[in-house]
Image 1 (cartoon, helix red, strand yellow):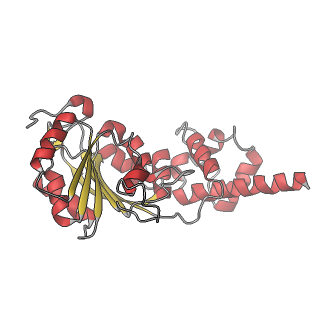
Image 2 (cartoon, one colour; image 1 turned 30 degrees about the horizontal axis):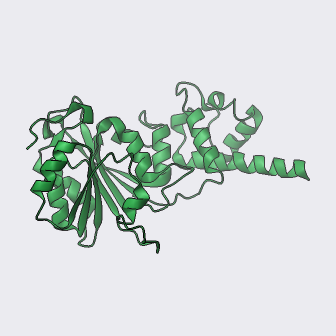
Image 3 (cartoon, rainbow, N blue to C red; image 1 turned 90 degrees about the horizontal axis):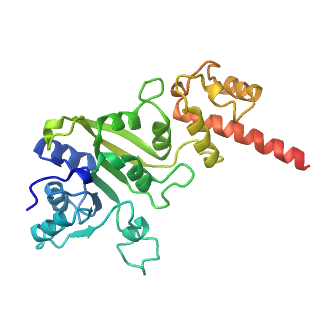
Length: 287
């Protein structure tokens, strides 16, 4: 049995039964659920998930842990273990249950539950949700993640808070975000230097939808590039001042607002207003 978590994989093994129960409760598991677990570690969460769902597909990058997990769960037919890096795996292939003939749109995996390595939180979020301009075409019903508290706060932050930023807008455009609970460092072995948190993401279509999703991505990236500056100054390289201030007036955005003071909904509305204006301008020039 592996006794020492490996630093290079960002391993911190959860040892709190209370936190495990909160994760399972947040996942709202049903007997027919087919779960993706990222980083099962020593399998304490895997076992609970398998007892409450139809099946668990667990992806583990650590070879020694995989050897241990295969022995630990050899008698459990509803646990499938894949040795590999989740970021390198074909998610569409996993969705089809590894069955290339599954072309009828049936989704094999419907939920994600994971205690993820903190140093690759951003890439994992994009892997599971997609991006504003490229959402996951087969979204999960729900995604429950145990991650660094600071990241959890940013993902779930509301406009005007210090934690609200580009990550907040990108994730909130793709999913409802719920902060489930804070997890103290003592709940892990070894204890990380930071607090952790459980969050639940529920993918859905945002209302209103972005007319030009790629333009929204660019607007958010540039808008949050220098948070201490007023938003109008950050965006001057993209939009002429008068047009931008006209958009602010229409949407009720203060001319002196900073990026974190604009809600996700208003970021989308701002992008749509500017995109629509650009499309009309191009159409009139072609005419």
